[in-house]
Image 1 (tube, rainbow, N blue to C red):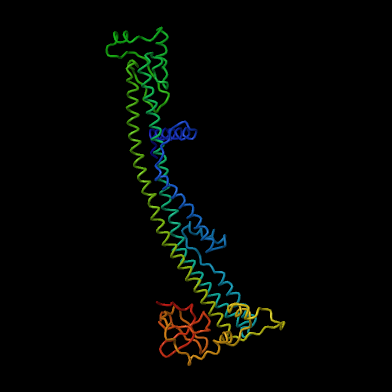
Image 2 (cartoon, helix red, strand yellow):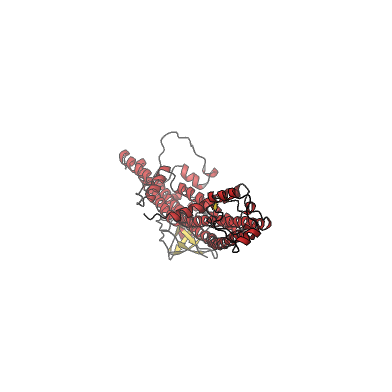
Length: 445
């Protein structure tokens, strides 16, 4: 192990100087270099971005995985750099229970058949949920985590370096100010005892010499006996602060300010170095903070992808449930119990609510409005104006002869007729014609 004592002492001295400067600033006993307003606004925007990104990330994780134990497990697997095991979704688990119940209660009974159909739909819903969670994790959660664990850590590191550079700069300014004040005092006060640095004390040899003499020599006596301005042996000065100049073997008469001139020059040099390092670090930090704008652009793109995946997920859920509703309409419903109606009448509820609460008929045509039930497709003629082209989004299997089967990505002509259910249109493909659900279509201009 390479142990460098000088470097350790130097680092300890720098740390102590910064600690003193920081403490004096907190108590209002030292001046502090203030950053410009634009830099402060960049810092505030960066902190706000970091805080809101953390909140959005945590809440999105709750949305995708409401179970806190499962979230903790996924977090541990991620930190251990191991693959997260596949987990059954709630919809898939419900589908499994329904299928087992139908098998035990009788798959040929009306209740068993319905359980099987609902189980299949729930299984498809669970698979759609799994795809949505996977897509959202990759396209939305991962970029947010990368920002917090990558870019933000770099910004925080550079900000800490900038804080240290600022403390060094302010400490250098304070040191230069004290040195100039001491220099000015040394040029106006001729007495040796008053002009020696306050941070210096006389050594033992110097004290013994002072005891032998009644007073320090005058300038005339000193110059006459020692034309060179030096005396051997002389008074040794021992520093109290190790960061200042080391003890000098000999000292010229303090009246000429030689000692404090050197201290001022040294403090000015340290200030120039500290100012250069501070400016360089401030520029580096500024560039990183201005990069937050690029982070916002990236997060905006990820947010669009998250909304798109969520839209796709809910569209798939609606399609699966619509298919399930049509399939259940083919089963004759038999309700055992009271013969009194327990649901609102069709005239006082919406079509969707009525279809879900009233007994199912043999076909979907029984639930259509009176005008639509009497609709004869062979007698329907397209209007002179109002037809549009539509692209089919998903495959659709016709439930009866009044509906038109669809294939994904094909183009058909659609139009509406007075009295039709707004969720349905008349579709034409060649010589074939039939009702088509609006949710399966993308209407083109």
